[in-house]
Length: 351
Image (cartoon, rainbow, N blue to C red; front, side):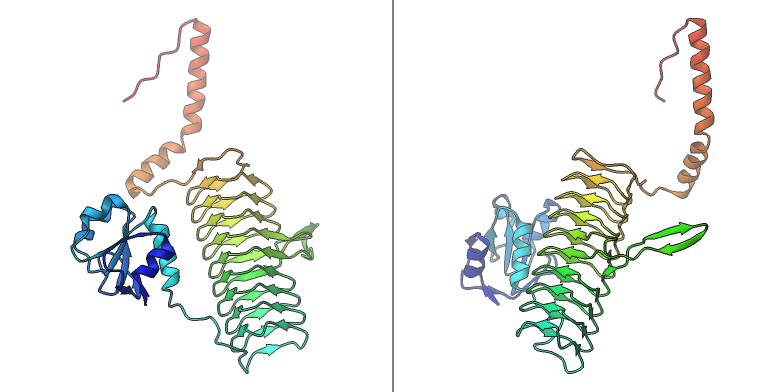
């Protein structure tokens, strides 16, 4: 539990209410109970302010008049950011590995493991690997030869981190992630595929999160590079020699082909597909299911996926789309006829 007086100080919030009250968990406005903290960042949910049973709420100053009597208020500039910070303070997520080294872990004598690091059951730590102070390596993980895991980084169960991969401090690697597997490098000799050894590695900065079952391939010659505070969702594929700038966010099921550079502060929507050997500038936003085939040189929002519609409408539109080349040729022919006659082509009309 944390007292509201302490929470207000840590969040730089104005407290309206009982400073001696405490909260022990976070919850939604609609479902919060006594002893819980909630927030309002979307005015759509404002009606719940008058009905919530939360002990305290994080809100903007404009929303104070709508709060139910008896509910303590923490006034902040950005309730969602304040909620994130409060949730960290109240986090009850367990460690990915208990204190110390589990007796079933297999650790090479040449590995360097900090005294306060935790190694879970049946984890394998290879030769010359380095596990930093306070790092947690979950059950069943594989840490390859010469790999480095930074201080306070949390690796959940069954993660594979290949040889010479370097991961920074305070990162979170979710279960099933594979970091440093071979990139898709092959040459074709008269129909037969020849493997190109992938001798680069992967370097991940500080404060990153890598989602469950996401794969980040090692570089072919130079390293695949992930900057600081990059967040990558579940089931993403980051190919060899990709570079991702600081503070970029990539949603689930996105695929980034090899040797692409993504700038800083970019936001990539779910299931996006990004072509290889292109560059995306800082601050670009890519909508979900978009397909980027060319470089993005100007900050903005880029979209190509089509929203779902009824099957009947989709079938009609698809049938028309298949005739677009014929329509184009007819328009070109009509333009030639009007040009030859000296008449102006009729202006387009809207139905």
